[in-house]
Length: 145
Image (tube, rainbow, N blue to C red; front, side, top):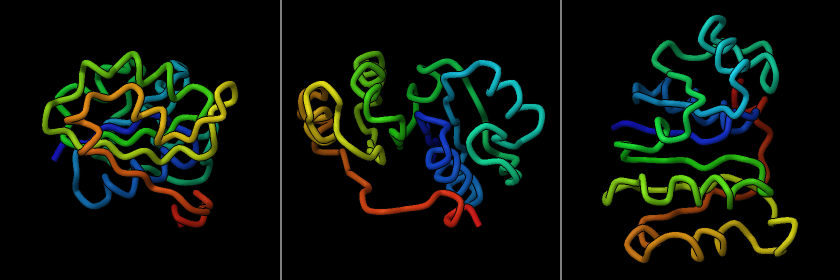
């Protein structure tokens, strides 16, 4: 299974690394091009999750489409205030059989909508049926350990 993870903050990095540790081919998207370069060189997210060496089969990209196109599972883990704009950019790139998981926390600043309602607004019905939401309290560092 090929997996894409959108958002290389502490939570996105932790989820991507856990899946890669399980043997899945995972591509992690980061907004910051310089962070992607450092991730590729050091295998450590020194900005958001310092001190943890990331799995060897975890790939990194700054190209959003690379984390979505051809992936059977896509996890969205960006900050809630940019989820809508990212989803709008890739909504047509999902495979028809893709499973989408939102692990972003919070509500959208302007609309006050929860993440589930943003996905419902933007995804076609066939993908809405294949979307799940990971919620609840978590501390990325504890999960990474």
